Length: 124
Image (tube, rainbow, N blue to C red):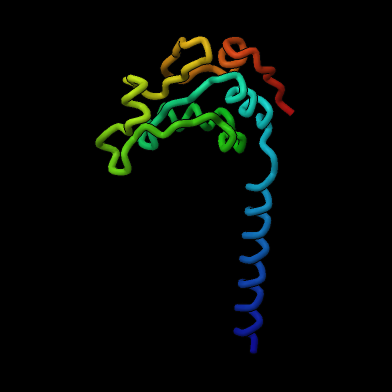
């Protein structure tokens, strides 16, 4: 009987932890408005899943990275480039392209992205 109670307690605890983790993942990010504004202003972030600098750029946005105007350039095997990026002549990652046609490569500070796009950088 004690074993059944222990197993039940572990299951209940696991479900509770899972629920709170899921709920936290659904919460709005601190930079949701900023990330959304970048796309509205015509900025596009080209990257590759295997690129450490792209991962760092996304981490700057925290949970708000889901709202970034991101285009994945890499093929699933990581050995090629998808047509959308080849056509745009994307040569390195990350690359940010702006509405005026200019580009910036590398990890771009949030303040620089704000200045380039006119988006307000407000952290809650």
